[in-house]
Amino acid sequence: MIHARGLTRRFKVRRESVDAVRGLDIDVEAGQLVAFLGPNGAGKSTSLRMLTSLLPPTSGTATVAGCDVVSNPAGVRARIGYVGQKNSAGENFRVRDELVTQGCCYGLTRAQARRRAGEVLELLDLEPLADRKPGTLSGGQRRRLDIALGLVHRPALLFLDEPSTGLDPQSRANIWEHILRLREERGTTVFLTTHYLEEADNMAERVVIIDHGRIIADGTAERLKGDLAGDRIAITTNDEPGAAKAAEIAGRTIAPGEVTVDGTAVRLRVPRAGAALPEYLRSLEAAGVKVATAETARPTLDDVFLTLTGRSLRESDDA
Image (cartoon, rainbow, N blue to C red; front, side):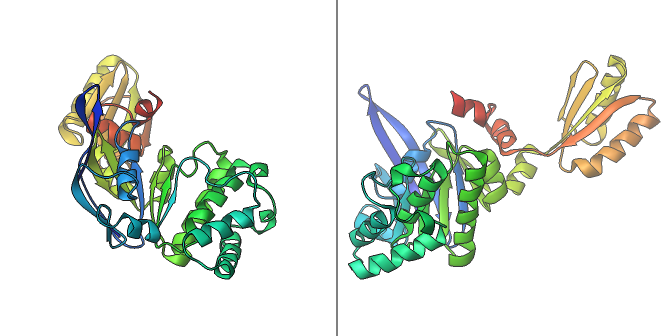
């Protein structure tokens, strides 16, 4: 579905050449749901625009849905759906009319476009809203309409740029329900960007993280968290000498090089906290260290980014 090698895009900023994307290599097979993550300015939007043929690369090659993005951009656009961050529908025509017009733009006859509009209205639970104007819809309803517009021509590959940004939790959940149903029922390949790390963690089967124009991590959320971040164990002791002893035991037995001490608090990183904690507590008891509290925590994708770059993905996005 997507095969890119060495994809690079340079911009002129104050007469200097700046790489927004530096040698992007990525392969996405049919049917995958891929979350593309990174802080603001990392190269997400530039990468997406190149893959959708909206922005020509400075160098490198990319084949999307069987078409070259440089030599056959029209072929790419005919075979993909693209839903940008802003609303796609106008304000002056009914929802159904917007969908019919979109279908005609993709070469469907008017009769075919009307039939297809009915199908996507049903698919995205928009039938009760078909005769309303987009300006009267809620944020979540308008976002579903945007996705419907991207699906009118039955693309096998759908690009979604921040599909749930700005929506309330209920509307976000509703959008994701429809995205997941698309994959399950239609086998649609979905490539999306999102600022909500929980969405990527829970919904995407593959996570790709980009920073400073380069891909720095690629895999399932569970593998990235396990390999790059690790589980956390945190304990507190009754006094600081006990904490120092607990840290020494942890560093010697279950977490070499992955222990920090702050007063009476000891924190360590391990591959599997659930299995490591009982063993650790037994070692502390045998050494006479009194433990006041103990807890474990699973890592997040933000922990992965922090491990790779030394800064938080959330902080980078807010900057």
